[in-house]
Amino acid sequence: MAPRVGSGAPATNLARPTRVATAVMATATLLATSACGLLDGSAGQDESSGGGGNGSVEQEVIRLGLLPVVDVASVHIAIEDGFFEEEGVEIELTSIQGAAMAMPALATGDYDMVFGNWVSIFAAQAELGNIKLVADSYYALPNTWMVMTTPDSGLTEAEDLIGKTIGVTSQGSLAEVTIKSVLAANDLNPDDVSFTEMGYPEMSAALADGQVDAALMAEPFITNSELEIGAVPVFDAASGPTEEIPIAGFAAMEEWATENPNTVSAFQRAFARGQEIASSDRERVEAMVQEYASIEPETASLLNLGGWPTTLEASRLQRIPNLMLEYGLIEEPIEAESMILSQSRN
Image 1: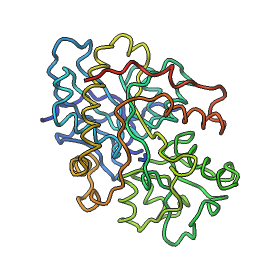
Image 2: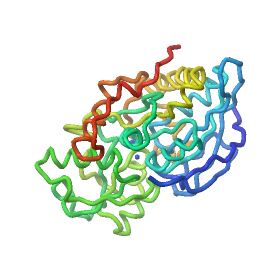
Image 3: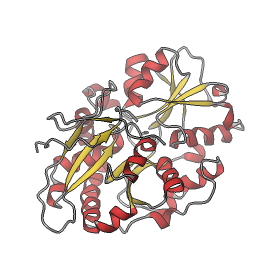
């Protein structure tokens, strides 16, 4: 399906999990390809899925802020297979650097939905309120949410990071929370490391140039960095207390979701079908990631994949605000269940 030119919704320079406030900074346009990843860090670009408009949805075009990570393979599958079109909606994609930077734009109506790490989404709830959770996208499995470094850094375990600087896509994000959690689990002071923001595509160069000592990466950037600069892991940030941690999902403002319930349901149904395919067909995921993240087949074949849930489970997501409260990212408890929208079934 050939995508149409997007409307040019605001976008930051491209970047990101694992595999996540300032305003969105740049506007980008669609390349006539099936997706727009760009591992080299060039500006984000818009694309759209074709939507038939069956008359049952309140809004036929959903403006979605997205990252070029493995997590979102299911969205691209659902676009390519026409699942959104069958539901009468188009998905207009705009590349973002991270949810922390995109959430303010969601609040001002520049996006209808934003994909992002759960910490940034819950942080936006604490600051802005009225955030609703549309769908769960991805959770970590081994080697999918990694602190990486150069082979000659001498950093081989958690304690080696004390006093070091770690690159993350957004401060106060899932990267920061999971790193601090692993450090604490190893009887280390989580405040004895520092974080600096950068996009995923910039991390390999930043490591090679010594701008940072380590970086928290998601796929396909983990594998790409291994191949490009020989990057090696320091530790898996989704291990121990953060094992199988929920990584990312989709959020919308309550007002928009309330005004467009059929549109939300249409998105959920089409997205769930994409999730089911991503969960069961690795070859399809590899092929799709090659397109939207601009990686080589060799890299795609080496990717470590996480899990693609098909439902939003409050008990699973509650782990995130609990960790945020523990490490001072929020001051008051947040109940994930109160934020979850009704889930539409096929």
